Length: 141
Image 1 (tube, one colour):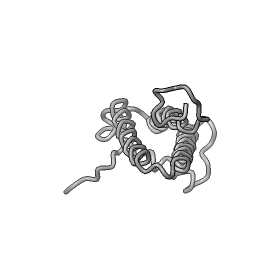
Image 2 (cartoon, rainbow, N blue to C red; image 1 turned 90 degrees about the vertical axis):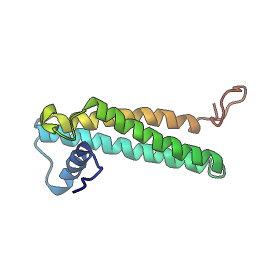
Image 3 (tube, rainbow, N blue to C red; image 1 turned 120 degrees about the horizontal axis):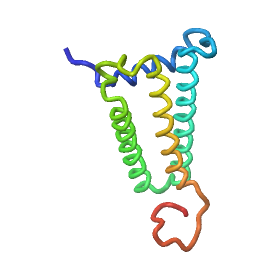
Image 4 (cartoon, rainbow, N blue to C red; image 1 turned 180 degrees about the horizontal axis):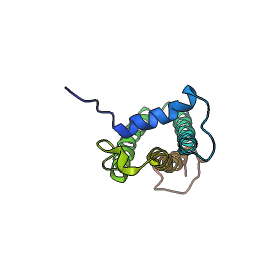
């Protein structure tokens, strides 16, 4: 039998993110509530990153060479982020209980942090254009 390539940690996060849709919000101060808050913040960061990517794509819409490289960079970043999270929680796929009941909240927090760093990187392409920086490449500033 072949197992899914989706890491268990991703499945846990998906369930945690979906759980508010399946039931009422968990009581404040509980681990379930902490998970909801952390995963809601992750979801917001993911939406913001997608928005920033869309804005960059729109701004550089006619530059097909840049857009191809941007897409390749985004795929590489996603692999990096997944590998980084795997390094943070190396046994999450085989023994998620190793990290305790706080694992989902921690995982969402760590992933959101990586996404916020990526957003900063993407925003470079949305900055106002400046003259004089000869090493800027495709970046406006």
